[in-house]
Length: 461
Ligand SMILES: Cc1cc2nc3c(=O)[nH]c(=O)nc-3n(C[C@H](O)[C@H](O)[C@H](O)COP(=O)(O)O)c2cc1C
Image (cartoon, rainbow, N blue to C red; front, top):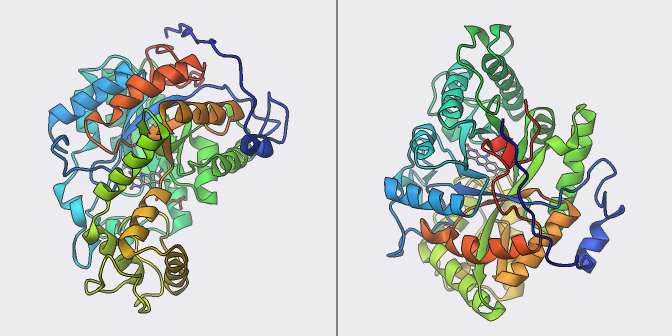
């Protein structure tokens, strides 16, 4: 394994922490959040290509094609120019539906992650290639073999984002296994990862568990990084415990400083309880970054991005998921619907945030909130679109200062960035933000090594 130390810029004297960060710190600068956690003060970036979703703007002339090779190649090359640790693909094993038809842009489809990453391995040299792959509907040896192949082909750059997938409609797409209870999904996942690990270590596998019966023999050589890096996404207490026992990196949904600090503490405690070194579990929240040269321009840009992301139809569709009924008669420029929801629990078409919320309570709270803020349906939906993501907006300098603070507090180890435009959405991050983070000494000036494990600062396996 090659290990070269990247040069770190130390041009600036350290600024004092903001009042917000200082209030969150409960310990000295070496351990601000937890006595068992020492911030590295370094950030690693991943580029998260979700494919179909409600945050990428596909309708602009500058948007690429969601399945065309050129889009992926351009995006991954920009990420590698910016020394991103990883290029990351999401997964959905069945199209989301809304009132009986594919939801909004889902109909466009999303290419298979492993096939695509194998092709991208051929046009890149250092960047990690991470496939989101589900443990409920795959088979462990089959998936382990494909991931190990990617790891070998890429010279030790493969990662696996382990997800359990939280919705019944995906279960309906699979005859065997089907939809599992929440706790069962994580037990299933744990057995899955255990078998995959045995396969990667070349062991003879005789696994007879509640979830799998496997007779197999690991057959491929170890990769340059030993085995694929294990990412995990799913932030419930069960999900956190699972990550603390098995994951190298957590793809978390906590993008504010306060939420990220609490999540770090929770993960450190669970990691220590699992008998692992907390330094071996990195946290990279998903994030959207909207930048401009000045604050005023950035504010204007945020408004424009939200307008592009959420039009009148999307606003009505968003509310319909939570009301569980047809709201097409309501004016998007008028107040929130004053009718009760038709469901007990809110729907999950968009997957994020409010799933399984009690619909009656949620819709009442939303109506009150919108009335109080004087928001129309459209304005409310646009505000919610931003609030549901970890969003960093502002001038290049403000966002760099903010991220420096996240790094120094040790709240996060980096970000998984979803560009709102494909393929040019990483350009200003690479050209304007990253140089400022390098000046502040919190972002590497080069790759630390040739494997994903090295570039994330993870111990060898
Ligand atoms: C940041 C993040 C990204 C996720 N990405 C995916 C994905 O691409 N595909 C998928 O099937 N599930 C994805 N999930 C959902 C997880 O599979 C999981 O089902 C869900 O978070 C519920 O688990 P939990 O109750 O432990 O949070 C993601 C979850 C998080 C938090």
